[in-house]
Structures are given as C-alpha cells and as structure tokens.
Amino acid sequence: MLKNKSYIGISFIILVFGIYAIPKLLDRFQNNDIVKADRLDKIGKSTTEAQKLEKIGLAPKFELINQDNQKISNQTYFGKVHVLEFFFTTCPTICPKMNQSMLVLEKSFFGNPNFGIVSITIDPLNDTPAVLKAHRELLGVKSSNWNFLTGDKTYIYNLANKGFNVYVGENSKVNGGFEHSGLFALIDKKGNIRCRRDNYGNPILYYDGLDKKGVRDIQQDIAILLKE
Image (cartoon, rainbow, N blue to C red; front, side):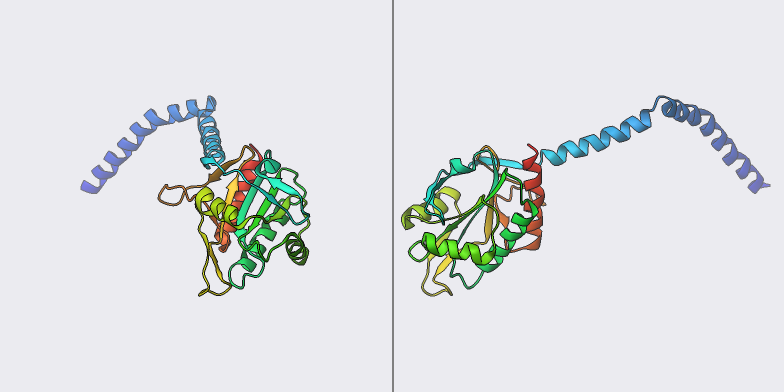
C-alpha cells in the first residue's frame, strides 16, 4: 500500500514538472535560443584563442651581416612574423637540435612571404659570413627569409643578454666553449615579442626550441600571428 502511494507521489511530481518545463523547452527550440547559445559559445572560444598571445614589448633593434655579406636589421623583418635564436655553428650540444626545430618551422610555413627566421651566432670570430653560408647549405635551408647573422662580438652579447635578456657567454669549461639557451623568441609583424601563458597564467616569454611541445606551441602561435 505504501509502495503504491510512493509511486503515485513520484508520478504526480513528474507530471507537474512536465507541465511546467516542456512548454518552455519547446519555446526555446522554436525561437532557436538553444542553437544561438551554442553558436555564441563557440564564437567566444574562437575569439579567446585568437587573442590569447601576450604582447611583451618591442623586440630590441639590431643590424648585422648575413651569410651573403648583406646588412640585415630588425626593419628587414618588419611586416613578417619571425622567430629569433642565438646559436653557433660548431656547437656540439643543443644547437643541432635547435637547427632541426627551426627546419620544422621553415617547412611548416615555407612559401609564406610573411614568415621568417633569424639565427644569430654567438661565436662571430669563427662564424664568418662564409662559414654561415656553408652551414646554411649543410642544413638544406630553402627560405630566403631565413638569415644567419654575424657581427661584433660585444654587440651581439649585449643584444642577447641586455636586449632580449637571454643569457649567452663564453665558458672554456663547457663542451664547445660557449653557454646559451635553446630558447626561441617569437616576434610579430610590428616587431613585438609575443608569447602564450603557462598553466599558471604567467607569460612564458620565450619558447623551448629543444622540446617537441615547445616547437608545437610556437607553430600554433605563428599561425595565429600570421592571421593578424
């Protein structure tokens, strides 16, 4: 008897809910409100994706000599999204991996006139334009927008350490004789350093050119900046 009363009570609650809720749901479907809300949600996510990159500030100005003895400056890359690194050709440790990561980026955006790469040596005494040209050919670089640059040593070290705040230095105790990071700087068409945020909401500043995730992240963010 009690069970029957329980069933009757539950049935009554369901009936009341149906009378109240079903007309409202039908009205929303007829007015397309549910579809609209779904579309707006998707648009919001898309907008957030496009605007997620932080603008750190203008990248330092520079003027150096490339593998063809031509002057190349930051103005050469104005209007182009570009990636910048510090390396040296005789590096026995991280540079080969950095070179391969840059080749991945070159291949991903090859043929796009609005993308470029800047590789600046930290061993200018050895890395003359001729050496850089041979290194470029050894890597199989195809893009005319990828320049290997050399110049005055003090100038380059100030550009790295004080300009980009990316450490480079000499150290006879380490393999290769020089210390530097595997970081890549991402610079937009207007010359601003750009980056994404980490899982804690902090700007990462630079991308890890030695890590597959870092290369994948910078690929995605280059694509975003090319659309700006």
